[in-house]
Length: 86
Image (cartoon, rainbow, N blue to C red):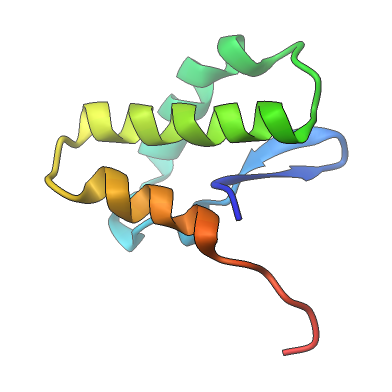
């Protein structure tokens, strides 16, 4: 899983998978989306781009909050797999 997904041909942040103190911080989410938008708009929506945006989000968060282990925690989300059917 990535920190982004595709909904209606748009890349969206999977904020529910962020730590609570980030996922519920609407101002941080809006600021991050605004700051990263220019680097994302116009790129093809494919696995390579989604991987790149996942890394961009991690870089952005870790620059704003340089906490030991945070990068590993966020990057570890890529190992989660969504399954349907509970």
